[in-house]
Length: 241
Image 1 (tube, rainbow, N blue to C red):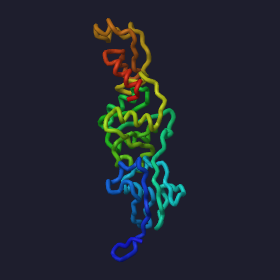
Image 2: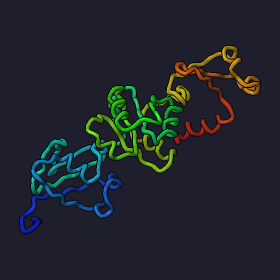
Image 3: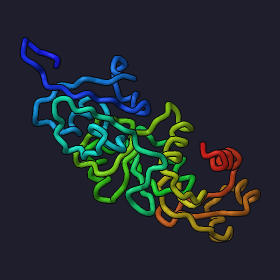
Image 4: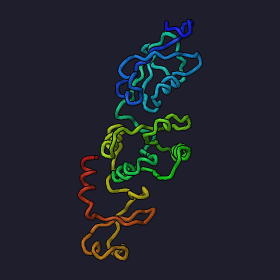
C-alpha cells in the first residue's frame, strides 16, 4: 500500500474509458490511476476530482459491481468509469435542449432540424442551470465546470472543434427525431405555412417576384422563404452537418 510521510495511504485504483480521456490530464490517460481516499468522499466526488463530469459517466463499476455515485470507495477497490452509451435516451420527451452562450451557431443548426432549442447569448451559468431545471431541458455545453453543478439535473458535453462536428456529435449521442424547416432559427418558435398574399407587404420586391412558398413564426412573426441560402440549408439537413 502506498505511503505518505511513513503512514500507509488508503487508495483505490480507477480506470477511465478511452472515450473519457479528453477530461483527464495527459499523464493519467490510458492507465489505472491510484487515488487517495479520505474515508468520506463519494465515488462521484472522486471521479469528478479527476476531471470527468458525472453527466458523461454511464456506469460506475466497483470490483465489477455497479455502484451509485454516492458509494464511498474503500481501500483496494478497483473502479471502472464507463462512458455513456450511444444512443443515449433523452430524459424528457419530446427532446428539449438548452445551449450555453458559446454554442449559438449550433443552436441555429439544431433548430433548422426542427429541434426545440432554447438559447440566449447573455445567460450566465446560474441562469442556465435555473432555466434547465425550470423548463426541463438538457443543457449542452463545452464548459466542464458547468456540468459539475449539483443543481444541474441533465447535461452533456459537446464534442467537436467546429459546428459541423458538434452537430454530428449531438445527433449521434441522442438520435432525436427531426422535423427540418419547422422552427424559427431566431426565436425557436414553430413555423407554419402562410399564403404569399398574406405576407406580400412585408417582402422586398425581388422576393415578391421570385419566391413562392413562405412560412411564418407563430411567436416572433418573422417570415421565412427559400432564398439564395436554400441550397446550403438543404445540404446541412441532408448531411446532418
